[in-house]
Image (cartoon, rainbow over all chains, first blue to last red; front, side, top):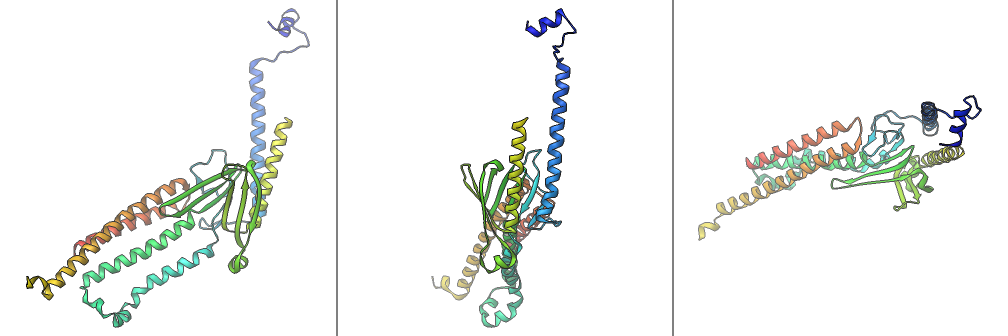
Length: 246
Length: 76
């Protein structure tokens, strides 16, 4: 028997008060609720802060999605909130769009081409028809693959980590993450005529983890992304400080 | 022996070879179309977005067209 319990049995109105286990559980619950409330409040506040730093975007096909509720990824935790989802700047799609348009319109010039390449007429109509379908399928898959490479090339910033999802081509995909606490240094580079004109570039994140570099390639507004990361790191440090004080 | 190398026979050999080549290409393309469906579905599971069902539908349409391509190749 402990000393306090001993005293309590002798003198029940003693100033030494031993809290009952029910009260203890209630107290813990209140503390947890308070913590949850403050974390939700800070999440909401930071979501607003994101809008202040990065602006607003609504289209799901945008290359800069702020607080996207419609987007999630399979490795996402229940409490994890995405603050930013960035894709390479849309201007990078211009090249494959032009090539696809050229490939698509090429058969339209076939009557003119046949004048110079008369051997095509040697093939029966069925062969020409099948070749045409094949050509359009190749054109479609070229454009589709390029679109998928852009669409699934995502750089995510959440309240816990940064995530890099790459879909390099139809046979290659890549997934990398780094906790916010592991980020050591961030830098950005804007290069070239288009990069300067449309304000896009690379964001390089140096981490303390095994894979010590995460690069967000050709993302719009790299300086804003760095500012957001800085704010998040400050928030994380602040939260850590509060937790250690408690 | 001479009949084998007659112009008409050579032409038919050429078309048999061309047809074989077309069928083989379209079969390889079908495998590729199946990989596309698999990849798009798996990427849609990795990244959930509002636009994903449209991409999956596109990949299936592409697969259907590649099957149609094989059918046209066999009909040559």
